[in-house]
Image (tube, rainbow, N blue to C red; front, side, top):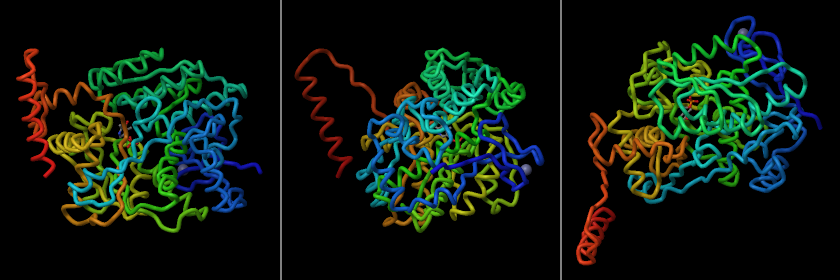
Length: 448
Ligand SMILES: *Cc1c(COP(=O)(O)O)cnc(C)c1O
Ligand SMILES: [Zn+2]
């Protein structure tokens, strides 16, 4: 069976474009394009057969099908020759049962999808493996492409750097100067990308990269390029698969440029259309209070949306005031009976630290999602018997500097409610024993 997919306008303008064409916007209305799959072809295989196929491939070692993305190749990018796929075994991330933390929050059935347990430490790998594979396919087909470029708040550039390096393709990343963590800066550097630190914010980098990629030999890797969405949507398919094909009640997800919430929605919609699931979860999109244009729009039922200038936030990956995917994100939230919640700097830092105390190691964006979850539980929008999945978008180790600053009380305007500091002692067994006894008492108090 040959499956087909193409680009079409998100507003339904006529026209279909090859996924191997260098095109990001609808020539008629200028809005974004989205990937459409030939659903009738996909329907020739039954829902049960798809589930069986996906389960058979999951985490096995037949390249590239063990990857969380390429195990679903027919639903993602069926036209790519396997020899052009650039996979680093992305996805297949842990779906963590947050038992103790859930009890503290009064959510009995709480799970955290650890998307940061992936090759470069964030969910951006899921989309980037697809995009870079398509680029390699285009190059193999003789399309003249010199380099792949993106604007980034850190994680996109890490993923682009790694996948391009694996394929031997030149990559260019535009980062807001001094606004990303040292770990995120060093990732594309180590992978040999051209790293351009621009004296602006993410929205400023985004404007420049759109300008330079008007030259078709520089291929655009931001999520306005919908190839990324196709990979990212496998996260929701994988969640359902990890629950033995049961749908959770809620997905809580932090959002900035708002491509990922749309991607997650696309995964569920496709599963429903092909009969793998019968109902949809509700979605909560969580924003930092300092970068909350969608939260503001939600307050009047999405009647108006206004871009803002995002203020500095610890949640650097979502410090975005003019999200590229806002239109399709709003459509997704309307379809999934969604809500938008926000978190202050204090709330996101404390919530990440509180969850860390139950064994996690959360990035600040996951902190935003967890803080939003707490608010929705307090307001009884989310009920205690519902199954909730929080999307943890990046690995906390990327933010070690920021987490250390929290515990040392060095973040301006944030009180380290859950601080834990090293205890400095002389090499004296008695003193060490005393410190242990104090620690045991304190932990008992916390647990009881
Ligand atoms: C990119 C990113 C987000 C936001 O995803 P969008 O698609 O831009 O909404 C959230 N968290 C992390 C860690 C990210 O890297
Ligand atoms: Zn159009």
